[in-house]
Length: 123
Image (cartoon, rainbow, N blue to C red; front, side):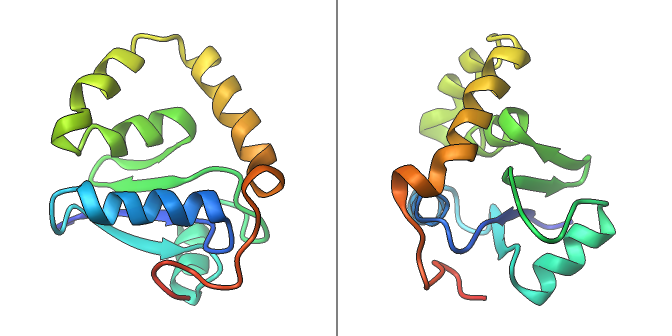
């Protein structure tokens, strides 16, 4: 796999904002971005055994497999040179704490940040 694939909610303003940030700061060609609502996103979800109706976590697919929740997010952030140290330090926080915070944000992301009719990378 040449670059990692990030599956995200293309209707979520927070998710679209993070994708925009990654497009700006991640090294070129580090990631391909796929909205879970797209046909390709639905195919990837099926292939990797994730529910297709709703996405509750960003999913990073790389040569090692699929990574979700805070582990996936930290793997993504660690690919940005200026954020590599932050990701490494946050990895020391126990996963149960990281995932509790991640899941709280995931559950409330649309309420807190809103929903969009457009996607950063299209459907």
